[in-house]
Length: 113
Length: 112
Image 1 (cartoon, each protein chain N blue to C red):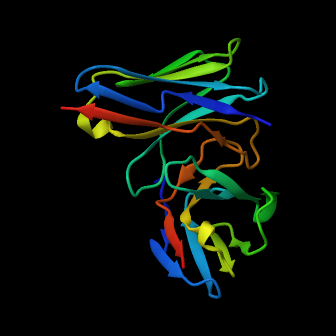
Image 2 (image 1 turned 45 degrees about the vertical axis):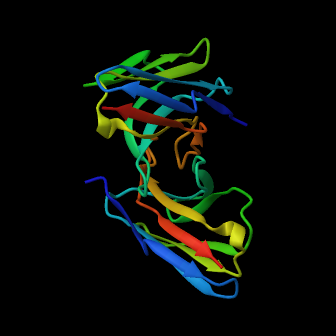
């Protein structure tokens, strides 16, 4: 089955700096890659996603890149703010009709002000 | 509106109790999911319902019993749980034609 690896496990950045989180997946049939942000005591919140027919997607300070050949995708957050501090999960799936998301282990992002 | 609601927010139960978790969405999504999340770990899929029918069961013990009474509601019935079942239980939903899953806030369960 699919396996998703996520690095780093923790990341500390200074406010205003950029943060990059990387994930690799094992199943070449996977075609959908969402990123979720989870704050303490809350459920995961979708922040951006990308499909396999696209190489890059951007939404304000957040961008995701996908390299299908290497089977890895990355989350880029620019101009980080203290409210970006949270746990970030990448995930992969390959089907609709009630699809199974396989999550990475998560990255704890701390933005220091 | 992308809201999935879950009740209760917190639940404490003994190993002989029977309780239920409830999830509701009014986005017209026809796929609904239960996930279990242990502390400092990613969510793990338990069950998937498509058109109110169970489509995926990730080999979950029978002490967890899901139910989808209609297209907006998803329940998880709990019976004879073990302390290791203590976790955050997350509900999610999605359109069947789309992959995007929207999560609820979760129910934090403690089994004593």
